[in-house]
Image (cartoon, rainbow, N blue to C red):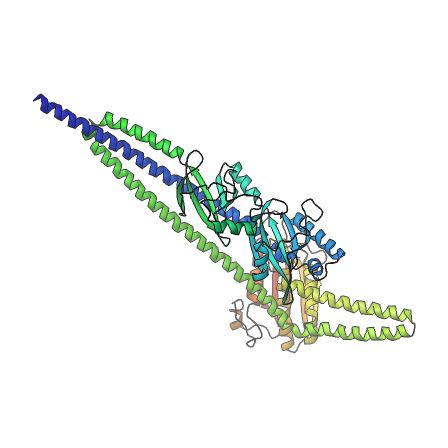
Length: 602
């Protein structure tokens, strides 16, 4: 009997010890896995942020070599490297470096010799050094551009080298190189206490927030890789082969464990293209392990104290477990819905951006269409002064041969007047057709806008035999809008009036600007045949036109009304008092602290 009780006690003790051990081990395992998952999420979030920072740091300088290669001072130096040309190129590179924030800028000839550099007058100047052994030079000569991270063989300072080949016609004449200092990224990581770094495609860390990581390979390097690094002098003066690997057993997975100098870490990596770099970030696992051990110990204690009451609380545990499962399901559904909403917001944002871009393209197309309708008159407006200028210069030459300086001066002044006339016409046309971005509403002097529009329309009106009379009330206040876009509106409206008047065989178009009802009203009256009722209903429909196919896009009136409504204005048409059509434009006065509201014209 006693032996049976003893055996029962022994089995009970073994069962209790087994249950307690299993509970403690299970609690430790759950806490460790959950903590590990949280650490992995944190390190992946950090990688995402750091990847954007690295890409932003590189992209803001990527254009620089190509832009520098287009400068005439650089081209002149490469074509004939005289002392004056080299000095001009040095000064230019020094100025661009100060304005762009690049670390250094320099120009190589086809042999890889440095002809000019932004540090030409500083210690460690690149001038006179040959960098043909650098991959960024050979890549630029072969493909047109190159990129390479290395320790500078001249200055000993590491940097990211961006290169671009310079061509003159169909032949290469040199290479422009921009050196970018990525050290501020490492300083930022160090200040934030982050164990973040960047490794090259061979696995050598060249930039890190932890100085102990810098210039160490992730895994042991093979002899071929070491030889290639030495040939490229990528890490000149640094014995990479002798450096101990940071994570020799970490493998190449996205996330892996490795043992650092004093503790275990979770290391995650992300590819940085097109350089083949690896962006690294690590977090220590000691807090997770400490918390897991603490939870395991607490679980063992709770198991010992609560084993006898397990049956009593079994039902409550099941209810609690059910609630936890429901919460997990609810969180998953919330996460899915949040993701769907984010996708919907992004889709709507892209659609709005595409709509704005399409609207800007249509506005620009309407400008070009208006210029096309006026092309013959514009050509006449420019060609007539050119012919007169040719005759004037010929006459000036004859008077110069006759030693008549007075006549020569008079004729030259007349020639300059003709040139100014052509320049004024071309300036109006160029400013009218080029600018697209309207910007926020600004104060606009309407008289200047109307004068600019009339300068462009005068040749068209003259060729059509139409007299355009423009009258502005003295002292018109500034209206809210954009000068270029208002000019486009009035060119479209007056051009329509000129064409309608000419088609009817008449010759009078009147434009009157006045203040009325807290705004400015501009009436454009033609003496054409008027607008039929059937056409009036579709007047503002996009792509609707009564002209022959190819003569108009049918966008002018639709876009004009849209432009006016953007600044709180309005456009309407009504029959003229003496026949024809009256186009009435209402514009709000400029109020610096108020949003323009649409006006209703009288």
